Image (spheres, rainbow, N blue to C red):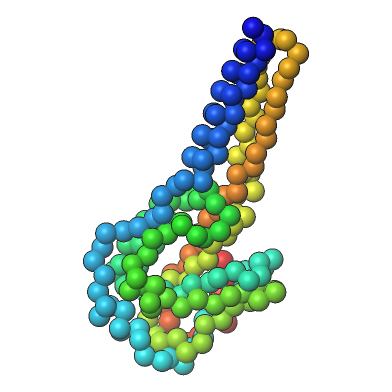
Length: 184
């Protein structure tokens, strides 16, 4: 009888723990319903002479994105700002971008010192963004103990869920102006 109770409580504890962990990793990606206009993106299509550069210290091989600030991108980044934390350790599945925006997005990888650069940028408004996989240093820890019946058997589970955050800067690039030290 006691063995059956222990087995049942263990199953309930593991089920609750599994449900909690799954809920952390099953957040839906951010998306918007704003209409996308190819013409809005074409305004940024010409080669420019400006450079946007900066660094994200302590992070290497991180994708940094440069997106034209079109009406679609404006709505997208506003929606992203409302969603402050993601239960993931990388940017995969955190955002659902329209294929036209992806086609016009530029991406650079940070080097071993965290330095990145975008060359030949046309004048205009842009968003520079990257996913900080270690943004939440106070990650959730779940302790599940059971059964609490004083029969000498206690199980404890501890899990730290990875949580990340999008870092975003909105910038205006003017003719003849470059950014050499864009900090996040």
